[in-house]
Image 1 (tube, helix red, strand yellow):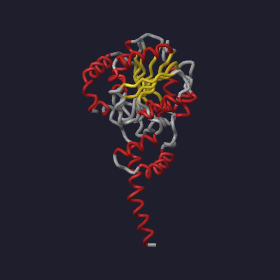
Image 2 (image 1 turned 90 degrees about the vertical axis):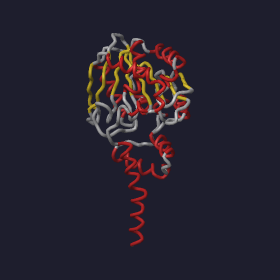
Image 3 (image 1 turned 120 degrees about the vertical axis):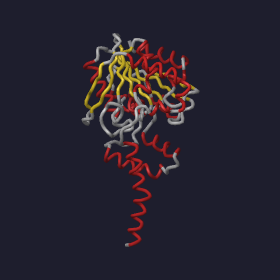
Image 4 (image 1 turned 180 degrees about the vertical axis):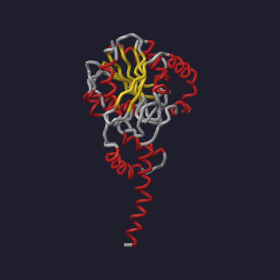
Length: 303
């Protein structure tokens, strides 16, 4: 009996407790919306980013607030430019709409797109202290789309997701209203929370292979979602034209995920790779070699 108690104590200390800590650090907390701006690879593009942020921040907007299906209050900013096209921008984990979309958002606005820049749950001005690594956020996208269909002046929608926002968009791709959502953009999205967590664990020398199964159980209990879910099924069922963007120097989400996204899509599609771009930087670092084909593609469908 004594050895059994010692064994149980050892399992708790060396396996269960670390799994719980990692689960809490991943799914719970309030996330720093400016953390993305502190990345070293932003430095070469700082001037362009700061100028775009200042100009976008000076534009008039309407504050928007909605209630997610679990009661969480979600907030965003609605910038109207008088056109019939609306871009809904879905940022990534530990980021903000401004940090992920200041340059691309301003470019969309200048091209005649109104903007709906949302704060993900547990980020920015939105409520909650729990994220879903894209799994809960997929339902939030549908709630935002419902708001846009009922309240936005524009009738033709384009949805652009980055990183976790891209994964959330991919998870919801087969549930989007094709009569209103005319095009999608998936920028450096991961295929599944489980695979992304395994990659992060490997980088930090954490034995993810043996820990993630227990974290999966915790997620099912406390988040109500399965981290083993992948975006492949929803993407294969979506018929909405889609552009996929990945950075050649992305160390956060591997290029192999981008290839799997692209292969899964049955819709009209375009793959854009910015060879020198790191994570979330395709539109900025890629310059006109990315921006021109990006706009040529979405402008064909969003009118």
